[in-house]
Each structure stands twice: as C-alpha cells, then as structure tokens.
Image (tube, each protein chain N blue to C red):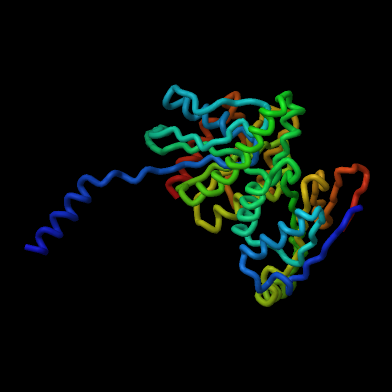
Length: 128
Length: 210
C-alpha cells in the first residue's frame, strides 16, 4: 500500500532547518511519500542529501525529491507585480515538494507543471 | 619600538605570504564525466591523469586534487588546484552495482564509500573559489541534484561554469541545458574526445577571474 502524508507549511515553518530535515527523513523512513506545502532552500536540500547519505544502509536506499513551482513563467507585467507581492508575503510557502523513499519511488519527472511519480511496483502512476 | 616591530612583522608576513591557491571544483551528478574532464585538463597541462574512469556509477568516491595546474590561453595564464569530486546523488543502491557486475561484498563496500563521497563533496563546496558543473547533455537537466548544486553555489556567490558534456552522443541536447540555467555560461563539450575544449578553457578564464 502506498501512503502519502501531507505536511502543511504551518507544521514546519517554525522548525529549524535541522528539525525540518529530521522530520522529513523520519516520515520517509516509515516508507511514506511526503507532500510538503512550500519549498526547501538550497542549503536545506543539500543538508537533506547529506543526512540521507549518512542514513543509507541495506534497507534504506535514499530518497527521490522534486519540487513544483506554481509560478508561471511567461506572464504580463501586472501578474509579475502580483507575484512579487505574493512572494513577499508567502516566501517559501509557494509550490510543493515531494520527498519519498527511493525503494518506493523509481523516478519523479516534472512535465513542467505536473509531477509524474513512477513507483517501484511499476505501473502505478500518480499525477499531481 | 612596538610600532616598528609590528610594521616589520606585517612586512615580512606580506613578503612571504603564500599566494592564495585557487581551488577549481568539478561538481555534478554521477557519470556526468567529471573525472574524464579532470583527466583531459590534467593531461593537457601536466601530462598526468587525475583518476580512474568507468561506466559504473560512483567510480570516484574520494575527493581528488591535482595541484598547480597552469592553463594558458591567448597569452593569459591561469593556475589552480583542480578538485575532482564524487558525484552527488540522492540515492545509492548497492543492488545497482550488482547489476553492473560487482560481487555483493564489493557492491556494498562501493555503496558505503559512495555515500561518504557525497557527504565529502557537499562539505567541500564551501572551499571552492570557482566551480565547473559537469552535466551529461543526454540527460534531463532539471533534476533536483543539479538544482541543489547550482543553488548552493549561487548562495555562496561562487562563480559557476556549466559544462554540457558528452556532445559526441546522438541524444546530446546542449540547448536544453542552456534553457534550464539561462543565467549561466554553458559550454557544450566532449571531454572524452576533447571537442570544444579550447572554448571551455576560454570560458574558464572568464569564470575564474569573475
């Protein structure tokens, strides 16, 4: 059975990067796929990779991670202003991050505004 | 007297201070051709190889440094220590190495060393003065590993040159890499066959002196 766990931004926004990464890895190690509201910073992502590497063993093979940006690239001037304003208020809350165990997720592809998630069992394909 | 001795100390320190060595890092996902490029650079200017190359991922599992490489191009010289790093990945499965023909014990050992290699590569990011990100131009450039490496370099204000390697292969798509990272210089090369290597050296001058 495939389990998805949603983590709203409010649940991690007050956590330090270290705690945030610990939380994500804890859920992923329970063989769940995590959907996080918002995006991680680049230093948080490299720290997540580093911690993942330290935890790899015969059972835990690592993670697959992908982000979805809700921002549209080609937009009119007023849309850009609005996006700037939203960015100012929401910050990293925008978008969606998917993190899952590599033993379950075979591959994640961006297409570019949907995420294709290919699971190990094969033919199960989820679209977000 | 105190003033004079302080001045003398500073003068002598400046006189004998070792010139800061430029560290040029090669970063990227596994099997992008980092060591092939390191070997090409080193063979061109020092006449020695840096490391072993193979088709099995994570061949480079330790940081390898070739010191004092001096590249010359159009009357200019550039000296740096070349740092070849292990490929950065989010997953390492020893079973992949079994499929590549390794025995179980070797495969597990390789996986263990590869995880340590990734940790070391990330740790070394802070020490780099400039970085060449080596990407396989036949692969999707939008991976989170690529985005994370480049994002970290950007945050540290480390100059970046992106190399779209393996242009000798049919599926190579340099434009796709340029489209993925439009704010960076992207040079399409074949490190294996030395294709466009002079353009690479010219771009390197621009990036390191930035």
